[in-house]
Length: 105
Image (cartoon, rainbow, N blue to C red; front, side, top):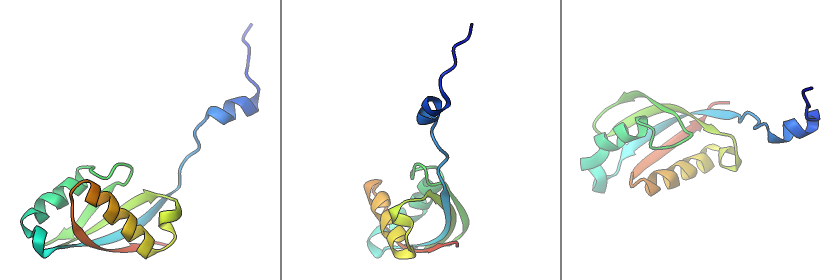
């Protein structure tokens, strides 16, 4: 005989799906990090921001435009809070860029 757990108990252990918020981001080179800009762009698209997938839409030697998604949270309240959140995460990876973020609503 197979014992089944009550439904409520099994739901408590099931992770719920996380909503992702899509955004576009323009990254601009900082003068003091001009030499590493191209490498930094490659690092971003190679997954250095865990749980934040990014695709490059276009790039030059001084700017890049990305499209990405980030898990919903307090940092997705507005464009400025998301930009600050992403800049802080990038700085921890030693990636220093000026960001302009637009949350797609």
